[in-house]
Image 1 (cartoon, rainbow, N blue to C red):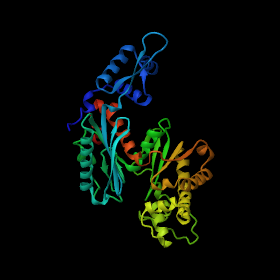
Image 2: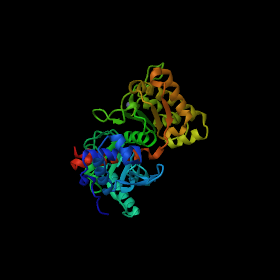
Image 3: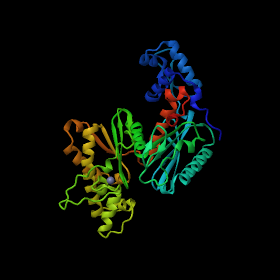
Image 4: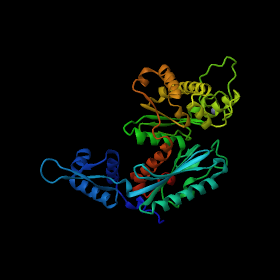
Length: 402
Ligand SMILES: [Zn+2]
Protein backbone atom coordinates (compact mmCIF):
# COMPACT_ATOMS: atom_id res chain seq x y z
CA UNK A 1 0.00 0.00 0.00
CA UNK A 2 1.23 3.48 -0.78
CA UNK A 3 2.02 5.88 1.99
CA UNK A 4 -0.41 8.50 3.16
CA UNK A 5 -0.81 11.99 1.85
CA UNK A 6 0.91 13.17 5.00
CA UNK A 7 -1.26 15.75 6.80
CA UNK A 8 1.94 17.79 7.17
CA UNK A 9 1.69 18.52 3.44
CA UNK A 10 -1.77 20.02 3.88
CA UNK A 11 -0.12 23.15 5.27
CA UNK A 12 -3.07 24.19 7.41
CA UNK A 13 -2.61 27.54 9.13
CA UNK A 14 -3.17 27.97 12.85
CA UNK A 15 -6.75 29.19 12.49
CA UNK A 16 -7.75 26.37 10.15
CA UNK A 17 -6.28 23.82 12.54
CA UNK A 18 -8.23 25.48 15.37
CA UNK A 19 -11.41 25.20 13.33
CA UNK A 20 -10.71 21.51 12.77
CA UNK A 21 -10.25 21.12 16.52
CA UNK A 22 -13.63 22.79 17.08
CA UNK A 23 -15.37 20.29 14.80
CA UNK A 24 -13.54 17.34 16.36
CA UNK A 25 -14.74 18.34 19.84
CA UNK A 26 -18.27 19.56 19.11
CA UNK A 27 -19.69 17.55 16.22
CA UNK A 28 -21.67 19.25 13.48
CA UNK A 29 -21.90 23.03 13.01
CA UNK A 30 -23.30 25.51 10.51
CA UNK A 31 -21.38 28.58 9.29
CA UNK A 32 -23.48 30.72 11.64
CA UNK A 33 -22.61 28.49 14.61
CA UNK A 34 -18.92 28.66 13.74
CA UNK A 35 -19.25 32.44 13.62
CA UNK A 36 -20.92 32.52 17.04
CA UNK A 37 -18.24 30.39 18.61
CA UNK A 38 -15.19 31.96 17.02
CA UNK A 39 -16.17 35.55 16.25
CA UNK A 40 -14.29 35.25 12.94
CA UNK A 41 -15.32 37.20 9.83
CA UNK A 42 -17.47 35.46 7.24
CA UNK A 43 -14.66 35.48 4.63
CA UNK A 44 -12.24 33.91 7.09
CA UNK A 45 -14.72 31.19 8.00
CA UNK A 46 -15.51 30.38 4.38
CA UNK A 47 -11.83 30.14 3.46
CA UNK A 48 -11.01 27.85 6.36
CA UNK A 49 -14.06 25.64 5.77
CA UNK A 50 -13.10 25.31 2.11
CA UNK A 51 -9.59 24.21 3.03
CA UNK A 52 -10.87 21.51 5.38
CA UNK A 53 -13.49 20.25 2.92
CA UNK A 54 -10.84 20.11 0.15
CA UNK A 55 -8.54 18.14 2.45
CA UNK A 56 -11.35 15.65 3.10
CA UNK A 57 -11.38 16.49 6.82
CA UNK A 58 -14.90 17.96 6.83
CA UNK A 59 -17.98 16.58 5.15
CA UNK A 60 -21.59 17.66 4.71
CA UNK A 61 -23.88 16.77 7.57
CA UNK A 62 -27.66 16.49 7.45
CA UNK A 63 -29.07 19.95 6.75
CA UNK A 64 -31.39 21.49 9.32
CA UNK A 65 -34.46 23.37 8.23
CA UNK A 66 -34.96 26.52 10.27
CA UNK A 67 -38.52 27.63 9.52
CA UNK A 68 -39.09 28.21 5.84
CA UNK A 69 -36.47 28.68 3.21
CA UNK A 70 -33.24 26.93 2.32
CA UNK A 71 -31.72 24.76 5.05
CA UNK A 72 -28.38 25.90 6.44
CA UNK A 73 -25.44 23.76 5.34
CA UNK A 74 -23.91 21.80 8.18
CA UNK A 75 -20.42 20.40 8.35
CA UNK A 76 -18.86 17.74 10.50
CA UNK A 77 -15.46 16.16 11.01
CA UNK A 78 -14.89 13.27 8.62
CA UNK A 79 -13.25 10.55 10.72
CA UNK A 80 -12.96 8.18 7.76
CA UNK A 81 -10.66 10.56 5.84
CA UNK A 82 -7.75 8.42 6.95
CA UNK A 83 -6.95 5.65 9.35
CA UNK A 84 -4.48 5.00 12.15
CA UNK A 85 -2.51 1.87 13.00
CA UNK A 86 -2.07 1.18 16.70
CA UNK A 87 -0.46 -1.52 18.83
CA UNK A 88 -1.09 -1.85 22.57
CA UNK A 89 1.84 -4.04 23.64
CA UNK A 90 1.75 -5.81 27.01
CA UNK A 91 4.12 -8.20 28.73
CA UNK A 92 2.62 -11.36 27.25
CA UNK A 93 0.24 -10.19 24.56
CA UNK A 94 -0.66 -7.27 22.36
CA UNK A 95 -3.74 -5.87 20.66
CA UNK A 96 -3.11 -4.47 17.19
CA UNK A 97 -5.85 -2.39 15.58
CA UNK A 98 -6.86 -0.18 12.70
CA UNK A 99 -8.82 2.85 13.92
CA UNK A 100 -10.49 5.80 12.27
CA UNK A 101 -9.52 9.39 13.07
CA UNK A 102 -12.10 9.53 15.90
CA UNK A 103 -10.62 6.58 17.76
CA UNK A 104 -13.23 4.01 16.67
CA UNK A 105 -11.73 0.54 16.29
CA UNK A 106 -12.40 -0.76 12.75
CA UNK A 107 -10.43 -4.01 12.99
CA UNK A 108 -8.41 -5.63 15.75
CA UNK A 109 -6.37 -8.72 16.44
CA UNK A 110 -4.88 -10.11 19.66
CA UNK A 111 -1.48 -11.74 19.42
CA UNK A 112 0.52 -13.61 22.06
CA UNK A 113 4.06 -12.27 22.45
CA UNK A 114 6.78 -12.26 25.07
CA UNK A 115 8.07 -8.76 25.71
CA UNK A 116 11.29 -10.21 27.11
CA UNK A 117 12.15 -11.59 23.65
CA UNK A 118 13.34 -8.04 22.90
CA UNK A 119 12.39 -5.37 20.38
CA UNK A 120 13.30 -7.14 17.11
CA UNK A 121 10.86 -10.08 17.17
CA UNK A 122 8.09 -8.08 18.84
CA UNK A 123 8.29 -5.08 16.48
CA UNK A 124 8.60 -7.43 13.47
CA UNK A 125 5.33 -9.01 14.60
CA UNK A 126 3.75 -5.55 14.95
CA UNK A 127 4.77 -4.66 11.38
CA UNK A 128 3.48 -7.96 10.04
CA UNK A 129 0.11 -7.40 11.74
CA UNK A 130 -0.07 -3.80 10.47
CA UNK A 131 0.52 -5.10 6.92
CA UNK A 132 -2.22 -7.68 7.31
CA UNK A 133 -4.73 -5.15 8.68
CA UNK A 134 -3.96 -2.81 5.77
CA UNK A 135 -4.37 -5.62 3.26
CA UNK A 136 -7.72 -6.58 4.80
CA UNK A 137 -8.86 -2.93 4.72
CA UNK A 138 -8.29 -2.88 0.97
CA UNK A 139 -6.37 0.39 0.86
CA UNK A 140 -9.50 2.57 0.78
CA UNK A 141 -7.96 5.29 2.93
CA UNK A 142 -4.42 6.28 3.80
CA UNK A 143 -2.47 5.68 6.99
CA UNK A 144 -2.11 8.99 8.80
CA UNK A 145 -0.28 7.90 11.87
CA UNK A 146 0.96 5.06 14.06
CA UNK A 147 0.57 4.63 17.81
CA UNK A 148 2.37 2.19 20.10
CA UNK A 149 2.07 1.66 23.85
CA UNK A 150 4.52 -0.32 25.94
CA UNK A 151 4.51 -1.70 29.50
CA UNK A 152 7.37 0.49 30.66
CA UNK A 153 8.65 4.06 30.82
CA UNK A 154 8.84 5.96 27.54
CA UNK A 155 10.63 9.22 26.82
CA UNK A 156 7.60 10.77 25.20
CA UNK A 157 9.31 13.43 23.06
CA UNK A 158 11.47 10.91 21.18
CA UNK A 159 9.44 7.71 21.54
CA UNK A 160 12.41 6.02 23.21
CA UNK A 161 12.15 3.21 25.76
CA UNK A 162 13.93 4.23 28.97
CA UNK A 163 15.26 1.67 31.46
CA UNK A 164 12.18 -0.55 31.50
CA UNK A 165 12.09 -2.96 34.46
CA UNK A 166 10.37 -5.87 32.67
CA UNK A 167 11.46 -5.34 29.05
CA UNK A 168 14.88 -6.97 28.71
CA UNK A 169 16.82 -5.66 25.71
CA UNK A 170 14.50 -2.72 25.00
CA UNK A 171 16.44 0.07 26.72
CA UNK A 172 17.15 2.88 24.25
CA UNK A 173 14.95 1.47 21.47
CA UNK A 174 13.57 4.34 19.38
CA UNK A 175 10.17 3.05 18.30
CA UNK A 176 9.54 5.67 15.55
CA UNK A 177 12.65 4.55 13.66
CA UNK A 178 11.33 1.00 13.55
CA UNK A 179 7.82 1.85 12.33
CA UNK A 180 8.41 4.95 10.21
CA UNK A 181 7.59 3.15 6.96
CA UNK A 182 3.88 3.23 7.81
CA UNK A 183 3.46 6.96 8.49
CA UNK A 184 5.33 10.14 9.34
CA UNK A 185 3.84 10.37 12.80
CA UNK A 186 4.62 7.63 15.31
CA UNK A 187 3.13 8.29 18.74
CA UNK A 188 4.62 6.29 21.61
CA UNK A 189 3.11 6.14 25.08
CA UNK A 190 3.25 4.14 28.27
CA UNK A 191 0.47 1.52 28.32
CA UNK A 192 -1.45 2.82 31.34
CA UNK A 193 -1.30 6.41 30.09
CA UNK A 194 -2.77 5.24 26.77
CA UNK A 195 -5.59 3.47 28.61
CA UNK A 196 -6.27 6.58 30.70
CA UNK A 197 -6.48 8.66 27.53
CA UNK A 198 -8.84 6.13 25.93
CA UNK A 199 -11.20 6.09 28.90
CA UNK A 200 -11.20 9.87 29.27
CA UNK A 201 -11.65 10.80 25.61
CA UNK A 202 -13.84 7.82 24.75
CA UNK A 203 -16.13 7.69 27.79
CA UNK A 204 -15.76 10.97 29.73
CA UNK A 205 -14.93 13.57 27.05
CA UNK A 206 -16.31 16.46 29.11
CA UNK A 207 -14.37 15.48 32.26
CA UNK A 208 -10.92 17.08 32.46
CA UNK A 209 -9.56 15.24 35.50
CA UNK A 210 -9.58 11.44 35.32
CA UNK A 211 -7.43 8.87 37.06
CA UNK A 212 -7.18 5.42 35.48
CA UNK A 213 -6.16 2.56 37.72
CA UNK A 214 -4.99 -0.69 36.15
CA UNK A 215 -5.11 -3.69 38.44
CA UNK A 216 -3.75 -6.70 36.60
CA UNK A 217 -0.64 -8.78 37.16
CA UNK A 218 0.87 -5.49 38.37
CA UNK A 219 -0.70 -2.20 39.44
CA UNK A 220 -0.29 1.18 37.76
CA UNK A 221 -2.19 4.37 37.08
CA UNK A 222 -2.53 6.94 34.33
CA UNK A 223 -3.31 10.53 35.26
CA UNK A 224 -5.28 12.95 33.09
CA UNK A 225 -5.15 16.40 34.66
CA UNK A 226 -6.83 19.39 33.06
CA UNK A 227 -7.33 17.27 29.94
CA UNK A 228 -3.68 16.30 29.50
CA UNK A 229 -1.67 13.20 30.38
CA UNK A 230 0.64 13.76 33.35
CA UNK A 231 3.90 11.94 32.61
CA UNK A 232 6.34 13.49 35.06
CA UNK A 233 9.98 14.40 34.49
CA UNK A 234 11.11 10.85 33.64
CA UNK A 235 7.81 9.43 32.41
CA UNK A 236 7.36 7.67 35.74
CA UNK A 237 4.31 9.53 37.10
CA UNK A 238 1.37 7.43 38.28
CA UNK A 239 3.41 4.53 39.64
CA UNK A 240 0.85 3.84 42.36
CA UNK A 241 1.77 0.15 42.61
CA UNK A 242 5.04 1.00 44.32
CA UNK A 243 3.69 3.37 46.94
CA UNK A 244 4.04 2.20 50.55
CA UNK A 245 1.18 -0.17 51.29
CA UNK A 246 -1.11 0.66 54.19
CA UNK A 247 -1.33 -2.75 55.89
CA UNK A 248 -1.17 -3.91 59.49
CA UNK A 249 1.80 -6.21 60.00
CA UNK A 250 2.39 -6.86 63.68
CA UNK A 251 5.62 -8.74 62.94
CA UNK A 252 7.03 -5.60 61.34
CA UNK A 253 8.17 -7.63 58.35
CA UNK A 254 7.10 -6.30 54.99
CA UNK A 255 6.51 -8.40 51.89
CA UNK A 256 9.09 -8.12 49.12
CA UNK A 257 8.00 -6.53 45.84
CA UNK A 258 9.16 -7.46 42.35
CA UNK A 259 10.78 -4.02 42.08
CA UNK A 260 13.28 -5.05 44.75
CA UNK A 261 11.85 -2.89 47.53
CA UNK A 262 9.72 -4.08 50.41
CA UNK A 263 6.20 -3.13 51.37
CA UNK A 264 4.86 -1.83 48.03
CA UNK A 265 1.12 -1.85 47.22
CA UNK A 266 1.85 -4.42 44.50
CA UNK A 267 3.39 -6.83 46.99
CA UNK A 268 0.00 -7.07 48.75
CA UNK A 269 -2.71 -6.25 46.23
CA UNK A 270 -1.62 -7.12 42.67
CA UNK A 271 -2.60 -10.10 40.59
CA UNK A 272 0.80 -11.69 41.14
CA UNK A 273 0.51 -11.21 44.91
CA UNK A 274 -2.90 -12.95 44.97
CA UNK A 275 -1.51 -15.83 42.88
CA UNK A 276 1.32 -16.11 45.42
CA UNK A 277 -1.08 -16.09 48.38
CA UNK A 278 -3.40 -18.71 46.89
CA UNK A 279 -0.45 -20.95 46.05
CA UNK A 280 0.81 -20.53 49.64
CA UNK A 281 -2.62 -21.77 50.79
CA UNK A 282 -2.11 -24.92 48.69
CA UNK A 283 -4.45 -23.78 45.96
CA UNK A 284 -3.21 -24.84 42.50
CA UNK A 285 -3.24 -21.41 40.87
CA UNK A 286 -0.53 -20.11 38.55
CA UNK A 287 -2.09 -17.15 36.72
CA UNK A 288 -4.30 -14.13 37.30
CA UNK A 289 -6.83 -15.60 34.85
CA UNK A 290 -7.16 -18.64 37.11
CA UNK A 291 -7.68 -16.35 40.11
CA UNK A 292 -10.49 -14.60 38.24
CA UNK A 293 -12.13 -17.94 37.35
CA UNK A 294 -12.23 -18.76 41.05
CA UNK A 295 -13.73 -15.37 41.89
CA UNK A 296 -16.37 -15.91 39.18
CA UNK A 297 -17.29 -19.23 40.83
CA UNK A 298 -17.56 -17.58 44.24
CA UNK A 299 -14.50 -19.22 45.79
CA UNK A 300 -14.37 -17.63 49.28
CA UNK A 301 -10.58 -17.56 49.62
CA UNK A 302 -9.95 -15.95 46.21
CA UNK A 303 -12.83 -13.52 46.72
CA UNK A 304 -11.55 -12.54 50.15
CA UNK A 305 -8.08 -11.87 48.79
CA UNK A 306 -9.51 -9.65 46.06
CA UNK A 307 -11.54 -7.71 48.65
CA UNK A 308 -8.44 -7.26 50.83
CA UNK A 309 -6.54 -6.10 47.73
CA UNK A 310 -9.27 -3.52 47.09
CA UNK A 311 -8.71 -2.02 50.55
CA UNK A 312 -4.92 -1.79 50.14
CA UNK A 313 -5.36 -0.21 46.71
CA UNK A 314 -8.05 2.09 48.12
CA UNK A 315 -5.67 3.46 50.75
CA UNK A 316 -3.07 4.28 48.10
CA UNK A 317 -5.76 5.73 45.86
CA UNK A 318 -7.01 7.93 48.72
CA UNK A 319 -3.60 9.63 48.73
CA UNK A 320 -3.72 10.09 44.97
CA UNK A 321 -7.25 11.52 45.20
CA UNK A 322 -6.13 14.02 47.85
CA UNK A 323 -3.19 15.09 45.70
CA UNK A 324 -4.88 15.21 42.28
CA UNK A 325 -8.61 15.72 42.98
CA UNK A 326 -9.91 13.74 39.97
CA UNK A 327 -13.63 13.77 39.11
CA UNK A 328 -13.62 10.18 37.90
CA UNK A 329 -11.53 7.15 38.83
CA UNK A 330 -11.78 4.36 36.25
CA UNK A 331 -10.67 0.90 37.36
CA UNK A 332 -9.48 -1.49 34.65
CA UNK A 333 -7.18 -4.47 34.25
CA UNK A 334 -7.95 -8.15 34.77
CA UNK A 335 -8.99 -7.78 38.43
CA UNK A 336 -11.63 -5.21 37.48
CA UNK A 337 -13.69 -8.19 36.30
CA UNK A 338 -14.22 -8.95 40.02
CA UNK A 339 -16.36 -5.80 39.96
CA UNK A 340 -17.81 -5.00 43.41
CA UNK A 341 -15.51 -7.46 45.18
CA UNK A 342 -12.66 -5.13 44.21
CA UNK A 343 -14.48 -1.80 43.95
CA UNK A 344 -16.19 -1.95 47.35
CA UNK A 345 -12.85 -2.10 49.18
CA UNK A 346 -11.46 0.68 47.03
CA UNK A 347 -14.48 2.92 47.66
CA UNK A 348 -14.53 2.17 51.38
CA UNK A 349 -10.96 3.38 51.89
CA UNK A 350 -11.09 6.32 49.48
CA UNK A 351 -14.23 7.81 51.02
CA UNK A 352 -12.96 7.19 54.56
CA UNK A 353 -9.49 8.67 54.06
CA UNK A 354 -9.72 11.45 51.49
CA UNK A 355 -10.99 14.90 52.39
CA UNK A 356 -14.73 15.42 51.81
CA UNK A 357 -14.12 18.17 49.27
CA UNK A 358 -12.07 15.81 47.09
CA UNK A 359 -14.68 13.02 47.24
CA UNK A 360 -17.90 15.07 47.14
CA UNK A 361 -18.42 14.58 43.39
CA UNK A 362 -15.97 11.72 42.88
CA UNK A 363 -17.13 8.73 40.83
CA UNK A 364 -15.27 5.43 41.07
CA UNK A 365 -16.30 3.17 38.24
CA UNK A 366 -15.25 0.13 36.27
CA UNK A 367 -13.69 0.48 32.82
CA UNK A 368 -16.21 0.41 29.98
CA UNK A 369 -13.67 -0.07 27.22
CA UNK A 370 -11.84 -2.96 28.88
CA UNK A 371 -9.38 -4.43 26.38
CA UNK A 372 -9.94 -1.62 23.86
CA UNK A 373 -8.91 1.17 26.28
CA UNK A 374 -5.28 1.12 25.15
CA UNK A 375 -5.83 1.09 21.38
CA UNK A 376 -8.58 3.73 21.69
CA UNK A 377 -6.30 6.01 23.69
CA UNK A 378 -3.48 5.54 21.20
CA UNK A 379 -5.81 6.47 18.34
CA UNK A 380 -6.77 9.72 20.12
CA UNK A 381 -3.13 10.46 20.84
CA UNK A 382 -2.07 9.90 17.23
CA UNK A 383 -5.02 11.89 15.85
CA UNK A 384 -4.14 14.82 18.13
CA UNK A 385 -0.51 14.68 17.01
CA UNK A 386 -1.43 14.49 13.32
CA UNK A 387 -4.24 17.05 13.26
CA UNK A 388 -2.89 19.68 15.64
CA UNK A 389 -1.44 22.94 14.44
CA UNK A 390 2.12 22.04 15.41
CA UNK A 391 2.32 18.96 13.26
CA UNK A 392 0.36 20.25 10.27
CA UNK A 393 2.18 23.53 9.93
CA UNK A 394 5.70 22.62 10.80
CA UNK A 395 5.69 19.48 8.76
CA UNK A 396 6.71 17.82 11.95
CA UNK A 397 6.17 14.13 12.19
CA UNK A 398 4.57 14.37 15.63
CA UNK A 399 6.19 13.60 18.94
CA UNK A 400 9.21 11.71 17.62
CA UNK A 401 10.55 14.69 15.70
CA UNK A 402 11.46 16.72 18.78
ZN1 LIG B 1 7.54 -2.27 44.30
